[in-house]
Image 1 (cartoon, rainbow over the protein chains, first blue to last red):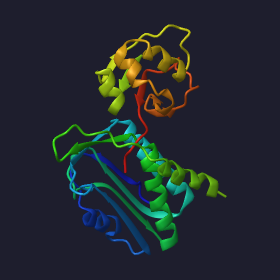
Image 2: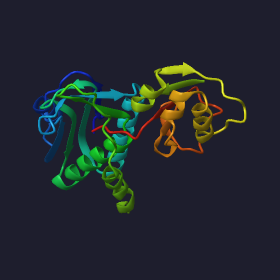
Image 3: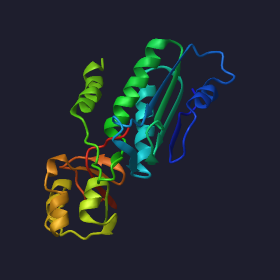
Image 4: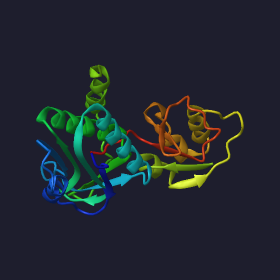
Length: 156
Length: 83
């Protein structure tokens, strides 16, 4: 397959356009799974999320996770985009698009990629509250670690 | 070596990055965290719950027992919350 497309950017992205680019001119792809993570307004209390990242390490870690997915499943295309900077409710934060022959590996690889992006990619979210009070850093969730761990347990 | 800080660690220490020169007996990531925590109030607050602090050496994830002798850049940050 072509090299995975990995982008860490402050710019908005167009998920439909990224999907179209991945399958353009291809006749061998049978399944395309796309996941988009968005900024929620948390019942109206959130004005924005500020995403901080570690430049250099973020790109390297995402590329490493992409490499692991390619080693586990016979994928035919892969795009991962992660934004940083100020992101408002309704805006997109992260995109994973996986192309494969069959849906099984495409679904699994997309879930694997998201589980590992959550726990390994160096990004941190700070809340900007709608009421103007100082916001907190979003805390990492134990369930995200558990979700990532199950892939090593499942490895046969 | 260069120390770089992110998110809540950066906010508590008050700087994004700095050059540090730990003594020779500071050999691992965990020992470096202990040494940094003794540098002042902000550092102590940043590293108060040192079990939750993650580190990277030259932009690769490191463990508490990872040696720092060859490191050019050591980063400290809370658990990641991307995605």
